[in-house]
Amino acid sequence: MPFIAVTLLLGACGEVAKLPAAQGFGPDPRLPEPVKTLIPTVNIAPANPWPEGKMPVAAAGTSVRLFAGQLDHPRWLYVLPNGDVLVAETNAPDRPLRKELLGIKGWVMGLVMKRAGAAVPSANRITLLRDADGDGAAEVRSVFLENLNSPFGMALVGGELFIANSDALVKVPYRDGDTKASGPVTKVADLPGGPLNHHWTKGLLASADGSRLYVSVGSNSNVAEHGMELEVGRAAIWEFDRASGTGRVFASGLRNPVGMAWQGSTLWTSVNERDELGSDLVPDYMTSVRDGAFYGWPYSYYGQHVDTRPAPARPDLVANAIKPDYALGNHTASLGLASAQGSTLGGPFAASGMFVGQHGSWNRKPPSGYKVIYVPFAGPQPSGPPVDVLTGFLDDNGRALGRPVGVAIDSQGALLVADDVGNVIWRVEGRR
Image 1 (cartoon, rainbow, N blue to C red):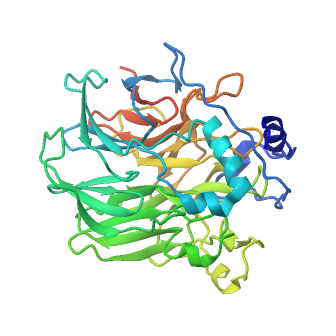
Image 2 (cartoon, rainbow, N blue to C red):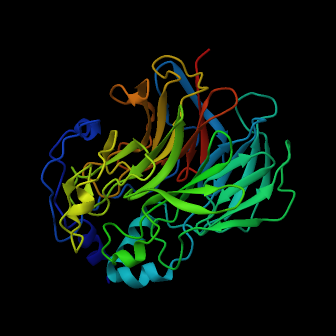
């Protein structure tokens, strides 16, 4: 297909948001009627990494600095007990069936992802970063583990570091102070993967006592357009017994759960919702996760709002679909999720709340996301509108200088933000 034809195709749809972005946030977002178009809304922020000396903008009362740079598509973060930081330098694995099933649409989407800075080979590596002098920047860098398969989530339990690859949960021995994995990689359990593996990222979180491991698994499609037989075990959060590796689906109907965090004793997750219903639908969200609960995908969204596209319909499942707790905006690609417990940012960023890394939209006009926000909590539930923490990832010409993904609180209470387009990790701290 000639380049001019692709350009016309990407810009063909004139559908734009009619609602203010703020109406897609909160416990009761506005949900207008779906808008269906022949060609999905495509509005790409082309990748144009940070010019020398330029950084994102930190909220009033905080400051931002470079924690580590010159990384290779850093997506996810994990802070070890001694303060060392592990970063998964990763991207999608080879997915031959995805290319086959999507055809021309897949080819166009490949161009879209390339323009957005997402179509780079996976480094398949976990790198360790150490701020030995405590100045807020890592001066020690070591390849902790390589030759993995699109690694993402990480969790340390006792003397074992668990890693969620795109197709398996694995582990390696860990001793305090290690800068390189000291033992072999051992498989704990298989995870839904395969040659399609549309949503390939696998988040990972351990229970407080370390006996259970939770893995977030995204769907194999937008809205089950390839058939439910390809969705077995997907769009779900799995619970694994750490000792035996035995797993079960803990909660389902979650289109693409990514980040997970504890708020007290309750598991929360950030979920990317479905596309192709217009710029004002459907809001991504974060929600508490109940054992055995069903959250709607693909048959309904935001509770029991029916999506007519999946066939056959399942009114029996829709009738039991649970409404999420808090919407995070339409198409914001809210990936990172971290409890504010231990944060020292101060001001409006209290210890009872969640930080959310919003990677940013590719199919909304105007764009949404491209920032890190904080959602305050009162007791077990969100208690107010979101507060911007880190912005400025889009320049005045609509180009993405960076895109935030994973977020984590470091050993000094600062917020770390993985930026996979900028290939850096930012550090936000309260001003002293």
